[in-house]
Image 1 (cartoon, rainbow, N blue to C red):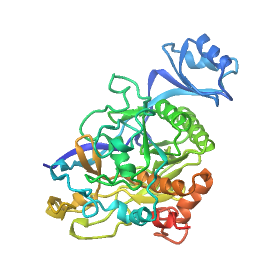
Image 2: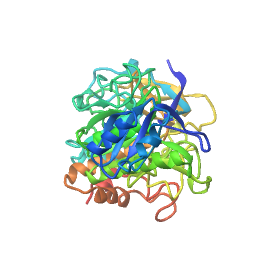
Image 3: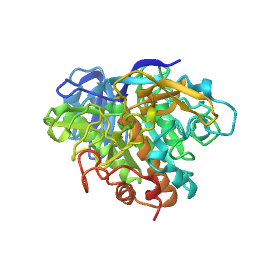
Image 4: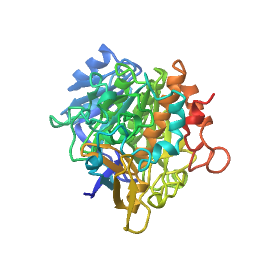
Length: 446
């Protein structure tokens, strides 16, 4: 049975011009460095440190109305802002209920006939050459990841998994979330679902996923994301971080500027540790170069990469225009580094199409569904579309490059991703595709 429902694909989305809402007890603070002097300043102002890092970032709690003003006196702490709680923007997701089509035959059921994304980035050619992401660690900073999923469990580092989300008991567990989709589970499958004879195949099917939970029930905060980045780049030992999440807001507001600055520091810290950060460009359908004075974060944070989305139009009928720019994706020269397969749902009618699975069994859905990206979910398998899906495709290709070049620097890894991409839009860098459509075969060719 196909279930249509709403889901918020950009995992932290705030409409341009809206007001940042904040939990009164939570603050993100910055200092030149963090140590005993900063701890003492927080305590003297009536706060408690929830997280701090020697590099100068901290998340604290206080019930004092004048906490921030008091904490900033004396100069030990340079700046700070109330932490922002940000909600998601709804788009459609389709639960495949596809476990009914999975058999024990030695084929990944939906690859290659239903699952178009790996072929679109030439991943099979990289696999044949021996590059599957083995030994490379990709942190998925997102919502809960269903680590027991039979099409994920082999590639999940449960020992390194963490949750920095707050709230209920479920929120504080990395492998718990609400509903039947679980955004982080879908992202993880795009990266590293193994070639194990069932379900789907990830673009880096032997990479290791490190689940780092910053969101719960589609919501999170800057503080949780910052903690997640710092953990992933250090104790989590991530080579690559994927963040299929984002906030869009007006520049200029003090709190927004402060939180953006803190997130910039976290992304740049990760880069300094040798960890490449890849983020989704957002699903607002905006030209960020000409949409007022806005910033998309973490897509425009620090020296990470931002990924726009493409998707076919009529794959149910055999279309293979996989690099077609998606109807919902943000774009802009100031935003987009690369494009990847994010899927679409623009097909205008609701008639059914039928595709054949690897087992020979047919699967029938509305034709527009097949233009989306199929991956793992808490319910089994689901289709979804968004830059949330394109970012992990690029992260997976980065894992293939990292496997071939274990000692590669972040800068060189970024260059290989961009220089090997298919120049799909205008020659050179363009606002829709950045440097081009990611290509795994070309990325590992040299």
